[in-house]
Length: 95
Length: 95
DNA sequence: ATTTTATTTCGATAAATATAGAAATAGAAA
DNA sequence: TTTCTATTTCTATATTTATCGAAATAAAAT
Image (cartoon, rainbow over all chains, first blue to last red; front, side, top):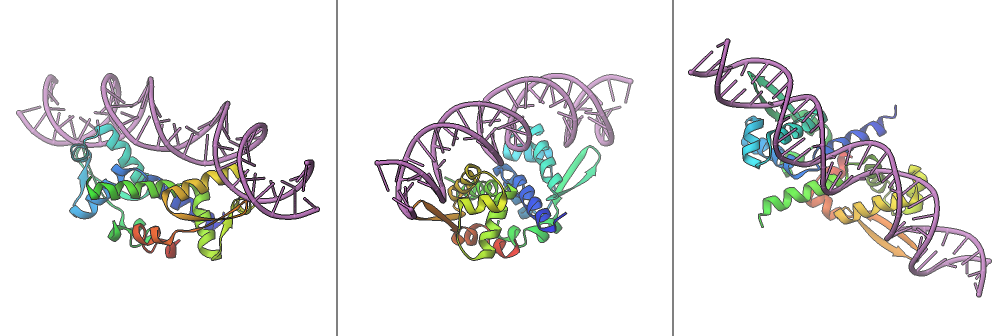
């Protein structure tokens, strides 16, 4: 299929994943803290239900904006910097 | 109110406006063509109804991503480069 | 003055989204 | 092995979104 259309669709998908303030905040905290975050920690920080955080985590992960490392029951989220570099170069610095 | 939160909300709003492939295409065409576009032209190019294009135009304009110049019945759309520069520096070049 | 052209608004609808609580899953700790 | 902790999935719901066609608006051209 057309590579242009692919990219437009991918960008729209990425922007969709970033079109919610709490998700912007998650990205920002990850960028600033230089460490991983887990679901319950974000739930406390942003004061939203764990199931909602899980939903946001999934959206970010499916878009390819984050990666997950599992340790026991806990899943640690970190930025997928490759995706930002490829599709949104400079964005993390401007955030 | 908190200036951080303001910016996060604004970014989420911008991303919301960009979270649809046809709107990405409109931005891209504007960037590439270096000229203004009107509703019926985009309707032909993207093969979507004029009323739908009008809806997209409104969304982009309300987010501050585009500007409109009216000449007679026709409204010409152009990029609001200030908004891109302020919130998404470098994005237009990477598009 | 009537018709054509460009856009917007309205009404309707189908799909997607954000949210929470409850239930399910899975591992850790006691 | 029972309990505690972390996350996900499910169910439900309210809101938003993208879309179209029809109607309304407004200016241009005839």
